[in-house]
Amino acid sequence: MTVYIDPPDWPGHGRMWSHLISDVSFDELRLFADALGVPRRAFERDHYDIPSHRYADAVAAGAVRVSSREVVRLLTAAGLRRPKGRAQPPSS
Image 1 (cartoon, rainbow, N blue to C red):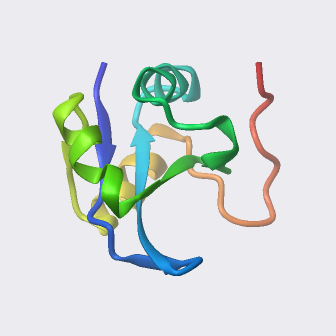
Image 2: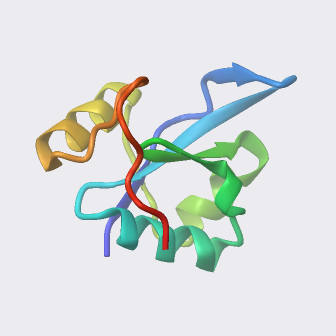
């Protein structure tokens, strides 16, 4: 299982955020996020939003550090990119 995380460079709600993604499946991503204790409400279209104070936890759990540009490239290459306005995958 490989998941990826970009640096916490995205501002929102008074803090900085990272994006946690999989290049294989949303199921793989959900399993990793669940093991990390990330709430399901943090899932947005094709990634989990991870607050900066949890970045090191995600890396320690095995998330691979990549650039934000690489996150988009990986999602697109895997066919998992869901830009705003597209339907979300079914939740289980």
